[in-house]
Amino acid sequence: MKMEGTGLEGITIDLARLDEIMDDLGLVRAGQWDYERATYDRKIEAKGDIYYLRVPAYAVEGDVGGRHAVMKLITPLLGKHYYPHGVEYGEGEEFPSAVVDTSKNLLKRLSEELKKVQ
Image 1 (spheres, helix red, strand yellow):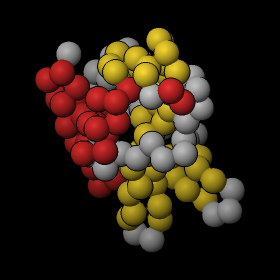
Image 2 (image 1 turned 90 degrees about the vertical axis):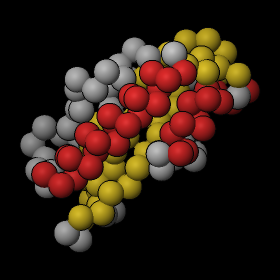
Image 3 (image 1 turned 90 degrees about the horizontal axis):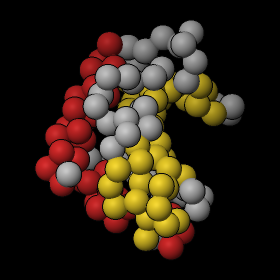
Image 4 (image 1 turned 180 degrees about the vertical axis):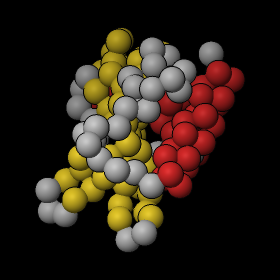
């Protein structure tokens, strides 16, 4: 599910600062990166199911591996994890309202933090 209208799309920010802000909000980059892209994930558990809020970004300057990059945020996604296949983001997925609300609140907090450093 695309989480549109968050105000995050198109924001550019230094990678090191972005990592700090995301980490403070529990969004983890871990191994989800290559030299041009990075994704930050937050695991959400509800009613025995696992969901992931994912905030993708790509480098508009520099590279992620060198830790000297300017990143541009893309529309966040909410997906449901299916063992052993992975995460599905399709429009046909059903998401509990509590998971959607948690995701929206987290993205709102992220937007507010990013505005402070712009």
